[in-house]
Amino acid sequence: MVEGPFVLLVEDDPANRGLASRILTTCGYPHDIAVDGQDALAKVAGRTPDLILMDLSMPGMDGWEATRRVRSDPTNAEVRIIALT
Image (cartoon, rainbow, N blue to C red; front, side, top):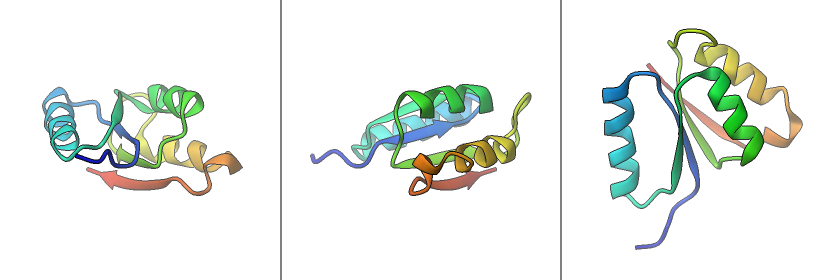
């Protein structure tokens, strides 16, 4: 199986996070997981993903704000972000 693009999954709900992670693994997508907006920003700073699956409704920094902050960095201009809700 050929590995796909690197995905960052941002999801605070453990059940949703587990399901999405299993789907990504089964489909051959290498991925990392962030549990909230702050964690997502730290992960993006460490490794720019090809795709972010972003939960919009999270405690603390929500997905809306995390998306704005990711987009504010020009090095992330090409990163695709798909909203999960």
